[in-house]
Image 1 (cartoon, helix red, strand yellow):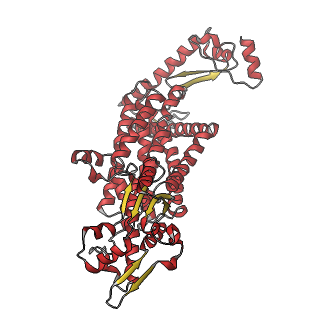
Image 2 (cartoon, rainbow, N blue to C red):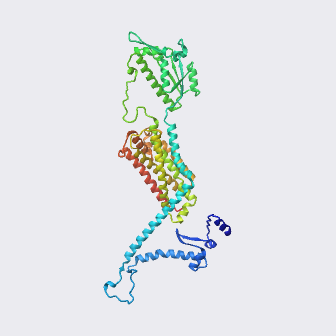
Image 3 (cartoon, rainbow, N blue to C red):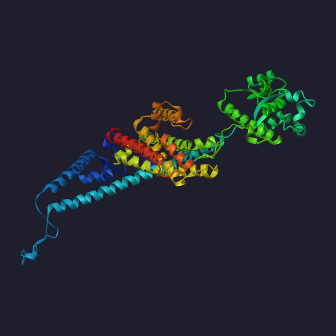
Length: 540
């Protein structure tokens, strides 16, 4: 077997052998003897036996171990000695005589020697610590180079998620079909095609200042199309409602035969019979199972009716606001008159993406190191778990910085999301949230023993945090107790802070923003403390 292994080594294959008996390595070209993470000797077996005058490598290793064991004892004896130690320059002259006091050699106190040695030991420890950090850093860089898929995933996945959100969420529904039963047009001489001839839709102002209206239902249908509601004509309300029930339509509406004339009488007289009120109304049936679409259609139908009535009042020479509700919404204090859902959700979504992406990536790093044996090999080489964690944190922080930059570039430049406040403060809060997610991932990686357990905890905590943080539904819709629990989550208050920065122009000195930063930093400190405590007391 040794001949085979030697041949493999000559062909460029590295051979690593683990054995419980040191003398089995006598046939190797070179061996290294390690104890307590320190390399005691590295040479050929023959030279080691010759140097230590031994017959077996076991005896040589024993002598090396005894020498290593005696070194700290000698150092402690030297430090504790009260005697004075002559300087190296203290050498008697040839004639062994001193002609004056100045001829006596300089005497150095043992305290000075101890201080010098302690300083030298401290410098050596710092050099060793730097060497360990350098080795772990190079190892981690090589892991990135050997597995570029993880790095590519970390860079591309935020882009995919941000693009998916802004491309699919927050836009108004389109191509909504609504059934229309227009008895007013059906009973006209031209039938249902009358609405295609705009000249037949008329309003006539009489001498007594009354207004005769004709075929105004066609105007209402035009306003509906402007609001992205496209009518499909049906002959009866039964057919239209059946189409809604079968899912072909999202809703149906009905115009009575005397719609225009009844509406004119209702506006002119004010006090009319119930029949006039019913004929001047538009009956609507909606499929309310789809909450977003049904509410959108309600809003658009109300807007279409407002536009229609203003158009009719203008044609009759009446003030437009005569038929509007007596409530006037002034210019908003913050935001726009017609806010978009994407503007409300974007801050929370950006924080959620960078938090959980960092958590998922780091939740397996330490577990992988343990399963692949990197943890044990590094420990044997003298690397402390804290040093390995610090290197991982440094490298992942660089990745999080890149993710923050690309997410902000896509949101603010690519999709033009408005931001009144400072982009720098937004980026800083997003970066700290990424660090917070990274610490959460390392917490799982340290406390969980397998990838499966780590993924279960990470994905299991994802949905509760998303549902409770106020991104999908306002916090005011929760009970008081649940709201208090929600405010303790790592990105509930930071999401509010980021929204205030983007929508209200809040500065870093505003209380709402300060609370967001304090919450993030508190979670970082708590998770790091738990991680270092676990690494300190964990045996393996």
